[in-house]
Amino acid sequence: MRAMAVYQLKGGVGKTTTAVNLAALAARDKIPTLLWDLDPQGAASWILGIDKGHKQDALWSSDEPISRYIQPSTVPRLDVLSADSSLRKFHQSLSGKKEARQRMAEALGRLAEDYGLIIIDCPPMITPQMEGVLRAVDRILIPVEPSVLSIRAYDQIKSQFDWAKKSQWLPFVTMIDRRKPAHLRWVNTELQNYPEVLRTFVAFSASAERMLELRSPIVEQQPAVPLARNYQALWKALKPKLNLR
Image 1 (spheres, one colour):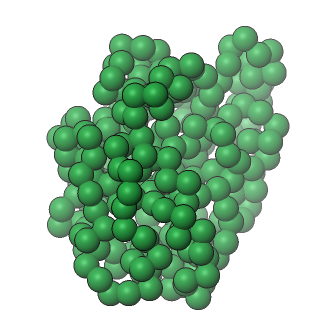
Image 2 (cartoon, rainbow, N blue to C red; image 1 turned 90 degrees about the vertical axis):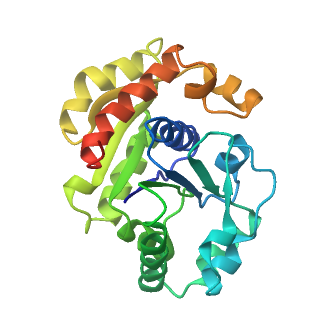
């Protein structure tokens, strides 16, 4: 079993859209997949058809079976550990990064029997507890929009979490808009300064709004549109890095 966190400090960069579509693609490849929604907004859970779940704060503060919190999604072979507003107190329910890492590692160990891949949609925050979660996973996927604030946030992440091995980071360029000269300029001149960034791009697309209307991953509903093909290419690039066949 492999565990991958999808994480960014800056909101609005397609983090949840990425998590949902990659999870759906993994499930389509017949990999039993769990999307663990740690973002209090619960957008990933909602897109996958979960209207109401169990409060996750109890999961972090008790020894209840984790299976009690898991629900099937609208996508075959894809389950969801849904988020709710109680996660706003997530950083208060654990004493620090050591306890967070220990509890997450224990949970992932129990889930390894049932899943081949766990994708964690993380909230955009830096806390010791969030660091503990990131220390427990195998890979950290980071959407980076070619904008000043998004790139600054990525640099902050690298500085804050300098313990991570280079192989753990999986940054990629997202929401690139070829109509914006600044985006093209960054890709053509600045991207070379970030050799660790995957050369698989996800373009800005209005199809993401359609996904919200349908409450279903775009790769499921409209697999031929450019956004879906972008995510298919990203998934193809990620599979060997996750040691998945």
